[in-house]
Length: 280
Length: 267
Image 1 (cartoon, chains in turn orange, yellow):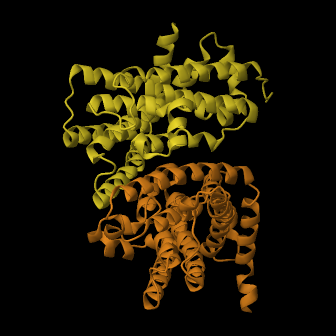
Image 2 (image 1 turned 120 degrees about the vertical axis):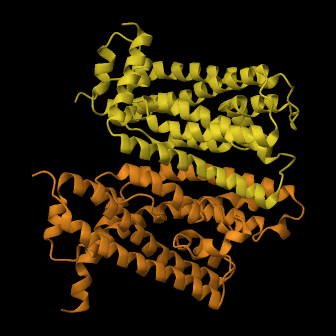
Image 3 (image 1 turned 90 degrees about the horizontal axis):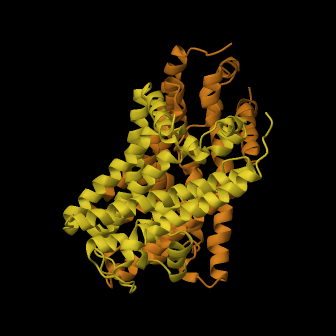
């Protein structure tokens, strides 16, 4: 069989879920409004802390402009984070529709992975575009230049960021798959995501740039898998990682994605063996 | 049965129902504790790196933070019925059943789903208030306790008012819109830091439109015995929580307007 035929069902699963999720425009707008408010507060708090200390530039590993840009970037990429499983999977398990997925002559992990990736991508793209329009275009036009989302350090940094954001999508999907498997095993998504969410928000760097957390934690913070979701792409955006360091950052993302896909594959096979189909 | 007795009966039934799934309730409470606690990490890390901000120390900021979280936890537990009004009552037609009962609508909605898990946020808030007490050397004189309790009541009223407005909106949209999260979760976020840090227009919004500063910032200044860097008089913190009750009253005014327009979805 040709490669093209092999990947076709997965590409179709990705595309159909992507197009389906793009329909939810009100949800994207509501989320956008919340994130503007959130980002605005964070920006004002950063400005106050940076303005308070004359030595702020020296004691901080990033400038105020970078912290502000980071905040908008993090708000725009908020739904890239793996904080809940794909609701469609949870529903399929509860209603018994998961039986259909089990009967399809494709790899079950691959199919759910493609669908979950489409689900995430369709939610991220409109929101990040709206956020960029607001923070990178509207704010400077309103004369609030110091609050605005600044462009990447240079062209190479921008390209590295795009590549890294793509890897972050795969990494996030691998984590969503672990949540999916956990939900399949436990039949309850609320408890799992209630505990997973805070961990993800802090360790991905969405709450605040990891670089601003205490210096002694930095190595551990950078090496843990969640840094690849937000913090590593942002460091590439600012040109803080370049040359071999940039390749190291991207390599870290690839490594964790492969490791988590392997783990997810294994866990899914075990769960599916003991799965009981609900309903009739 | 009197209205108040009915309310407590409803709350009891709701808690009893959740207690049937102890593992789930515990997990959700833990999630609330952790989820609302992550902002502590942000506040702490900023102070750790930058030191004091415009004369504010971490213990003082912790007092706003803790108070606001306690307020929101209580209001969120009570206001859940308004929060899910669109999806769980209006769209399903279950709202008609509430209207037929000869008891106050608001009490029925408040007792409908009293979430145990909100205790996670409450505990987190109380822990931060304890931290603030120790760090800033707050002396809990009877007067300070009275101010804190009054502010707490005003804050619960204010957040409940926001949830009532969210419910009111769903009379038009027949859906629970997450846009109100801007004022609930976003309000908690905004009120966690001293008002003086914000831009002038934002300070106005937080004082006169959604009076979060009146239930958190000014009372906390009074408890700390700190003069307002923006020049508000000292008695401000003692009377300002009244604004929370005024907001709740206005919210119920809007609620009655929405209710008048309610026509069952007919399902």
